[in-house]
Image (tube, rainbow, N blue to C red; front, side, top):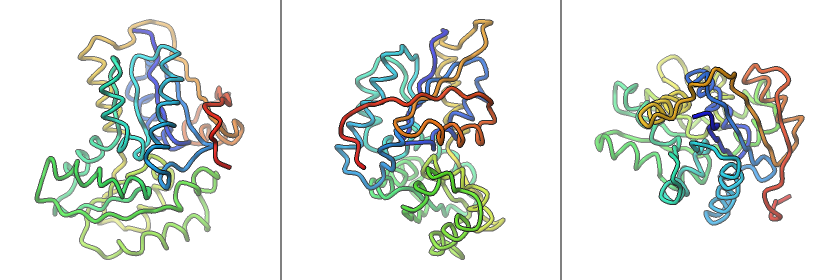
Length: 270
């Protein structure tokens, strides 16, 4: 099937998932929507996150996507089951793939989870981890400064290093041997997070496992793109196209990236 895979996120964070989809499924075209004008989703009420997620979903459905990846942990936590139950195409979130990877990685059964306020409050990772292994020990920590840091494009350098260290201090020296980056923005801070936590803590991103799940589902349903035509990548943002393009180019290593600013609703908060 030549139709594209749709990926949605509150901003640029889902690019970390898109990068893995491009690597593991190089024949597949991608349509990506990042709601950067209303990012971050973490502090927002559940009903707003649900409405915004449906707006992005409906936009991509109008473009005939064959699969939807909700690459936002906050949106996955509050909308995945509803959207999956109402669509006829496969819908994948990022929480269960991240949880599975962490459980495969940990040696002592002590796992840390960092995420937005909304994701941590939902306890979605706690439920996902305990569903598989009820004996696992979990420490959760909200990191509200991380998403704005990444969205501003300032995710490298001394300021980012200082914010990462101050935020993760409660986890330093804890018994965790595995840390889940429970927000798809956080892998852009991955080197700083890994450096601060030290070599004894494995840092887990859900992107690789999510892309693997997408590949498995598309293959099982005979939906892989077998055309000889090269794939296309289109990116849509509700915010600044130049800033989005700068971050996407830096992360994806794609030149002349196709980014368009769109409007999904009138309730964009300034």
